[in-house]
Amino acid sequence: MDICSECGAEYLPAGVDEYVEDVVEDIIGNNVESRKEEVYRIVVWGWGDGMGLFGKKKVEGKTKDADAWYNKGKALQNLGRYEEAIRCYDKVIEINPEYDGVFDSKIFAMDKLKEQEQQEELLKTNKTINDIQTALQKAKKLDINTRVEEKQLDTVKEKITQGSLSVALEFANKCKNSLEQKINEYKKAAERSNTKWE
Image 1 (cartoon, helix red, strand yellow):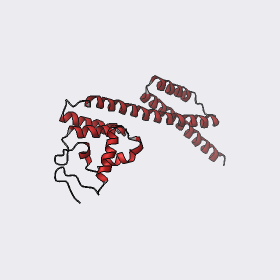
Image 2 (cartoon, one colour):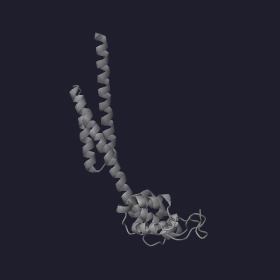
Image 3 (cartoon, helix red, strand yellow):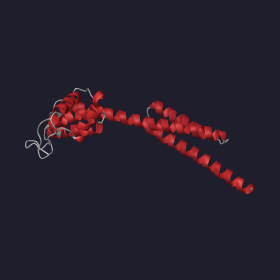
Image 4 (cartoon, helix red, strand yellow):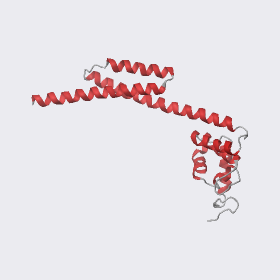
């Protein structure tokens, strides 16, 4: 394996470096969607000369080049990997707090990360609501009183519309657990009554 004496990067077979540079130009230019898998390999697996593609300086395997960290942050941000992008922007700030646009990019990535987390929380809440509705149907078929859980489900929906997703998820889990407990108690009681009669 050949290693570059200037930056410490390993050389790849002929033509790969040009290919990687082409993909990196697409990353920085926000043309990520059509080449997402290639972008992932370059950014995460370090194809080409790794960080060297995002800026040409390396010091003992770790770049001290703010451009490299910034461009890598942008690439990760374009892939929707906001936590990693934020860490790259933090490196830029550490190297050069005056770097043009880094704070705006970090704020953008932080906002997107928050949106992503809220979306994940909403998905979890919606899944739990579906589980509750299934359990409510099951409980009603068994003639189990579900008035409390139905009110809890209304509260969950109200909290979602208010934007209180973590509270909604907490209520949803309590409601789901309460229904599951009632159904299990019903089944145990039914099993006990069946064995008494046999």
